[in-house]
Length: 122
Image (tube, rainbow, N blue to C red; front, side, top):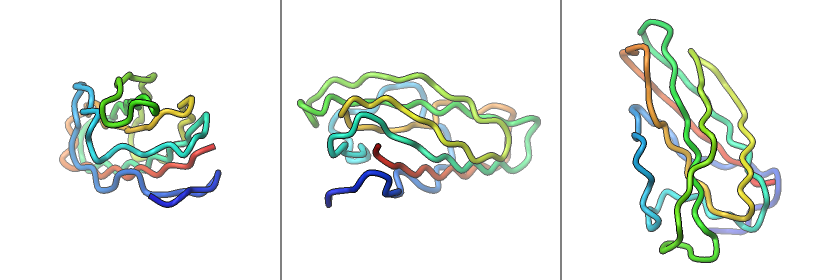
């Protein structure tokens, strides 16, 4: 991956249509956003529900030890709830660690879901 300057926004995950669940991601998953050495990350979430009764979802940031990489320890950061169709920015204290944001759960029985996640290191 090319060096990313602070503030540059790139696609982290796109067209997520279902929950990933609460199981931690594998440390060797290719989906990790590699931290080029910044303390924080800002995640921009664009959520679009179709149908349902007051649908919402829970986003769960996961961090992976930068020093150990694909064999590193995976830990979870504080979850964020997003209600209805919304656009939110979430600041995550990454402390130099890599990042992977999951859609942990979806509620309210939507008939459709589309989540796009973008990331900027800070």
